[in-house]
Length: 235
Image (tube, rainbow, N blue to C red; front, side, top):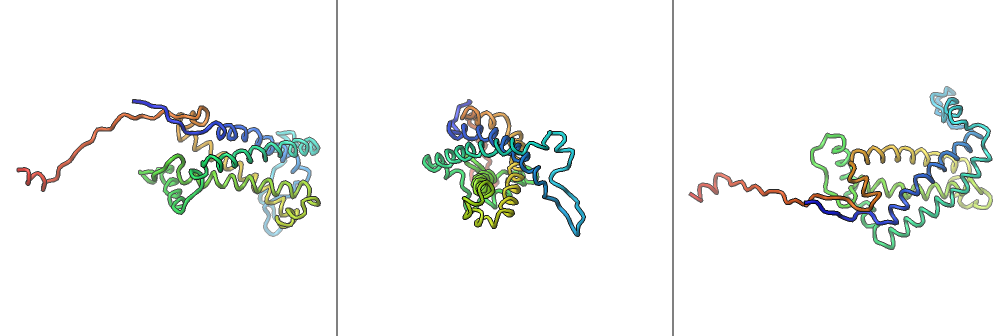
């Protein structure tokens, strides 16, 4: 027998899906800004082994000479990003949903077990409620990253007006590095998130859209096994 079970409230689903196009525009416009000062490389003793990003990348996306456009989009959608994040965090606090999202003292150990299970190196998955331990850590981390992006972004946007934020970030150049690293983190999170959604299956994906999932409540048959000692006593 199948039943419908509520899983994700409307506001959490709304902020989840709105965040995707906002972050896409923010990353795209950030690349337009970054091209104006393309300085980050991985070098050892003056030899460059890796560069963010190679020239073909900019040529393919037609990124060069669009600094003003990038700044306009980036600083506009920054406010939508901040507002969406504020609504999400406020709702989780007011509704009590934060209890299901925050990691506990067992989360890091269980997250390792979740990873081993996903890699098919462990047969049994650790127990979970609405979110497993790995999801709790990842979703909490992404909220902290969002706050960090907002702080470092303001420090770069107005380093004089927000000089205390710039100082807190370790200066303008370090704030820019933090901002860039957080962006890389979003991309990696997105890739892992999509893979996890595919592995979780259609029912889980549907719940993020509709807010409910279909569960099977068919009772499982109970098999009783008597040991030899109990059989002897029965005889």
